[in-house]
Length: 476
Image (cartoon, rainbow, N blue to C red):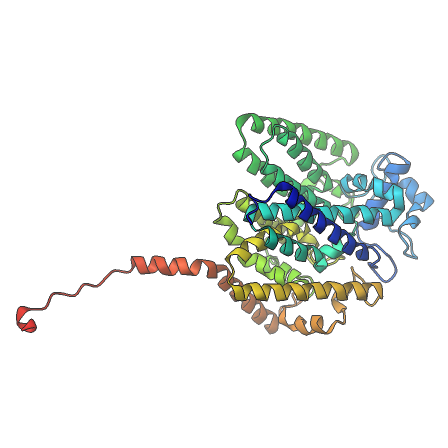
């Protein structure tokens, strides 16, 4: 049954079932330890510290939280919480992160502290994939395949872990999916709703501004003039409030200059320290095939995303090109702007804002794949779910720590597959050979759907040879 012919109520029921399945599964992600000594680590406690300050003091200043050591409520490291930022000229101590996530987590934190915040995040994650299923079903016209593929993506290890990590990536993904659904809408309220979603995306992190720009540009290209004008006016107003608030609070257009690493550097200097084009190109594929931090190491069926992306460029579906642009932009950010892809976090973080869109990419690929490849994809998805189960078991048994050594998991099949992937911590002969093999495989897979058409065109363009009629004497 085509998605266009599928009643909206049936589509909503299937989305609700997926939401319930994922929310139940994500409950097992909440108890995973980040390090040997703490339940959360990296930037996570600082988002919650700001949440605590907003609740208790109604401001972003963290001095009182440090004086009272109120972070002990959610951060259980025996050495306490270090300081990630420097005091400003007025003495205020602000977290070097956008306050959007901290504000978003207020309801969950009020209800249950760390666990309440994680519960709120896992509900957002489950809703994100439920809406991604609706998007994939409408874009491909194959609701059954879209449901199965989205469920597999949602149950894969990266989504499982980041469903409860205190990071803005999954809420950002929610904003991206909602914005894409709004692009399919032609209602009068769409410009206002889209402006709100894109504003939320910016307040979750300035690093998501390129994604917001792609979404805004896509709407401006297809909307009627009045709707375009409305979105532009709302966008200018939103940008003005954003700039005014950041200059007032942080003294710059980003909060990053408060970080101890940058010591009050200007916004341009902070951005320049992140941007680099030399020595990072390998991340374009390393984000998928690195032995420790590649998505394919944890969910091999996601390896089809890279070669399947070109299929979106040729489709007549409304948002195929927009989805491809969003994935490409985030890949560019993860490759050339992020300082590292191998951070103090679980693999896949840099791609999580567009991760749910992989369901759309794979659903499109499913429609072009022969039966043998579909069978291989299903087997890879089954293996991926087994990896998630093994990771959850190892994490709860404290055999591994999610932000430290998840790749040390002692699951036999997981360890057996390790040598198939290059390790980009060092460039050995093995690394180069494995990289070449994977790149060739990606190139062949990307070209395969176009090969029949190319061969047909070549046959039509090939000059036909004509035989000169035989001489009458030869005939005789």
